[in-house]
Image (cartoon, rainbow, N blue to C red):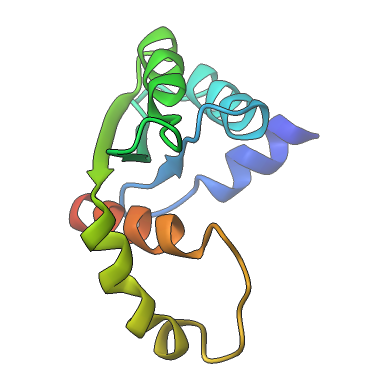
Length: 115
């Protein structure tokens, strides 16, 4: 069912990609999509300059193993802080999600490569 569901969502007239954190969920999704695709899947991850918060090396290892076209961006503390004033306009509601800032940054990065 997962493969069928993923394949259905990969049908598009423009290139699509996957946000790859390197965790179990995104790695499983990426692996199943790449295995069933004749094209190299584009993957995207955000890393942080502060090694305490950076898990991008996990995503990079998964991407290398799966053979995806991997894109990584290292976020500085300043860039993360610059996103905060934009949050109310982006989410249009109160939001208390610690992943909001990296999510916005990975979306901005993917937008440069995909529609």
